[in-house]
Image (cartoon, rainbow, N blue to C red):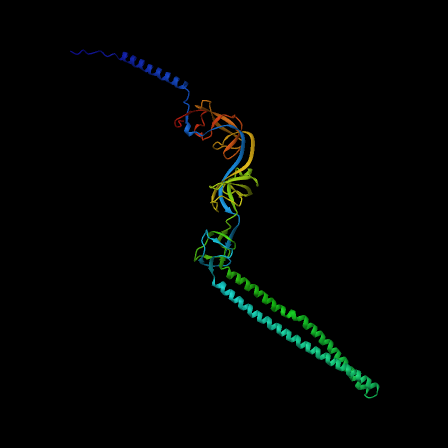
Length: 423
């Protein structure tokens, strides 16, 4: 038989209060414990870290760049006149002589202009010859008139002399003598006039022919120009070398001055290197350069530094020796290392990620046992492409992490493990 138990609400409330107080005490104790607990140290896998040792020795300040080999002597070939490309006779890579024809351009108007100029020249030459003959004929006529006048004058002089003797002998009248002397004077004046005409005819002979001769010379120059333009339709290399580029195709229309092809002498070659604008301020002409042409290292010198910046880079021309390793050819990609300076007895380390010269950066320095690393402020000096000078904060023999540690910026200490990173 079941016995009905009497309910005790007050006792139940007391038990609930005790249980609630116990839970609150546990929560408070746990909160205090958690607040006193230090945050976990993040870890970095050793295989993921680029670790280098600080060294003392000779530091070569070098700048790295990349580029291509380019010929020193390049001939850009342009169209001498408008026209249409009729034939392309050579392709890039073909060796050519200076008189080798690369392509033919068709221009009927230019060819007709050359023919017209030749015809005009022939007509002008004929006109010049005709004018010269006319002048010579007029000169001969004047010379004949002058000679006749002199003969008549001499005859009149002799007649006057004879009449003078006859008049003294009383054989002729005074009137006859006077007539003879008058004719002598008249013919002497005529001789003077004809002499003057002859002199003017001789002086004007070249002047009268000069205009026609100038017209001939003008047309000869025009014919030479037309012939040159017509011959320019057979586009020649202009120098011995290798065809680097043919910029047109058969049937293509080109304008005068348009680039048709590029021919370069295979040697000598130079290296055209692109250097970061940040490092370009350290460059100077004459600096030594090691150029990697894949089949060997070639020693060269900085020959020219472009004064302008293009896309964040500065172009540097490097002069190379004439004899190069096999395989060196125009447009071959190369890597170059430029020697800027040498610092003796320097303290240096490998170049960290995002390092700046002559500044301050934060690096993690490894503990002697290599299991932890502490954030350290490092003062830097001059920087090479693969190393940076240390002026303070590190000593020779210290090991530091050079790889990117931006994930641990809020930590002053990290653990180095053989496992992957755990921030």
